Amino acid sequence: MRRFLAGLALVLVHAAPAVAQETAIQFGGLAQDTSLPVEVASDALDVNQGDGTAVFTGNVLVTQGEMKLSSQRLRVIYGDGSDGAGRISELRASGGVTLVNGAEAAESREAVYNIDAGEVVMTGDVILTQGQNALSSNRLVIDLNNGTGTMDGRVRTVFQPGAD
Image 1: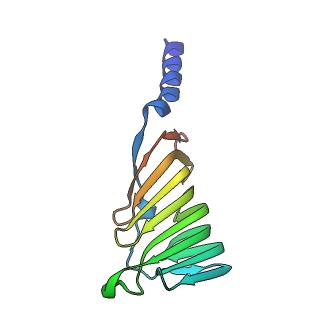
Image 2: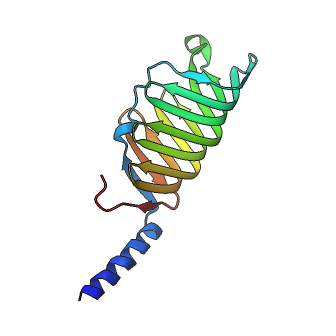
Image 3: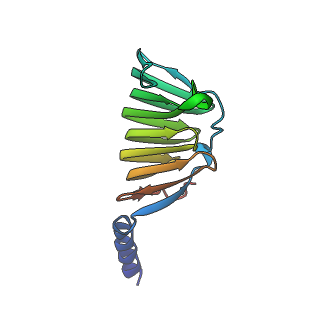
């Protein structure tokens, strides 16, 4: 009986990633006050007044409160109209994106941070670590206002026994 249960557990563990196509995640550490100032540092900056964008390249580091986002390239899009002039509306990061807040970290190829919506969408080989636990997928959507998120596109997980 014990061998049967062990075998069944093994089959279920290996079948779980194949079944999981979308997973809801609680991001206690990734809740963020999106009204805080956004600071950007990089090796170079190119500003285009015509289309209202700025492109930071090389060792880009974005900081907002406790949250940090790093990448090799960051395109900053400013708000339209008189009420949004000079106000950042969206950040588009590419080239090895890492998002860290507290003990939680996520990595991906690209990320889009919609500041008005308080939402970060990470795409391409996404890996999320929460303590000793790790999850991977093709896409991760994080709601920074309430600290929740959704992973979809071939979700796989590794949970460490006894970990939070």
